[in-house]
Image (cartoon, rainbow, N blue to C red; front, side, top):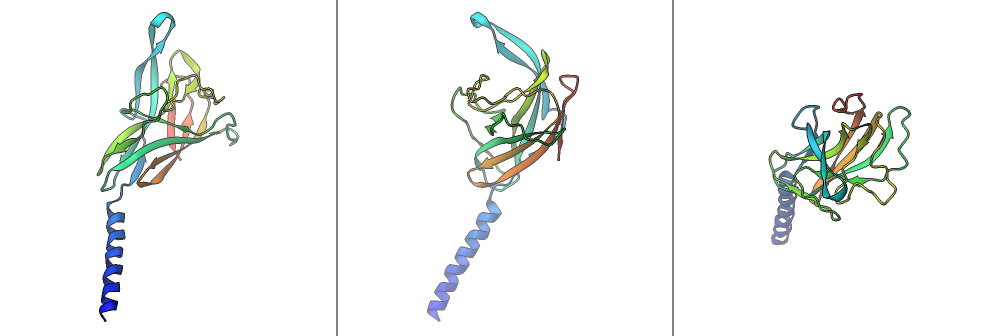
Amino acid sequence: MTAFGTVGAVVLALFLHVIRKRYLRPRLEIEFINEPPICRSSGLRIAERWGAYTTVPTYWIRLRVKNNGRSIARGCEGKLIRIIFASNMKEKTDFDPIILHWSSGLRHPVKRNPIDINKEGDYDYLDLVYAREDDPNKFYLQEEGRSESNPRGIDMTPSRQDYILHVVVYGKNCSPCPGTFLLKNSARFNGIRLEPL
């Protein structure tokens, strides 16, 4: 009877540990609406010759990544997995998955900067794509830890047309959070739209 009691206590302790861990885990969710502050206009500083800068009006489409769990989501990264042409449903072949930039993250010319998202409703913004007023023919992608000149042969400035974008947000201690969106082109640089699918 003592042995059964000991085994029962161990099983109960393990069961309670699993339940507690599941109850307290972080839970990521991707939120989106085509309104500020998620989408927003701003000025982008563009480096020119001899250290001079020009500011170009830009329109950013971002995703709000929220932690609805009861513990901190550690080491979170957002990844644009694939781009599909909406017109013919063919995958863009000159694109590899990229780690996206967090709006609150520090820009570093080489390394990635995963972030922690606090518990119970805290959130951060993930830069997905932006348009520039001076270039109505392209979208721009903002990869984490790389400059705009990408040496891997990836098209970081796809032409302005409709695309289906597959995004996944990962964390060290939480389940992946996928999202699929339709990026709709517009003649106006700040008229582009994103629709969750």
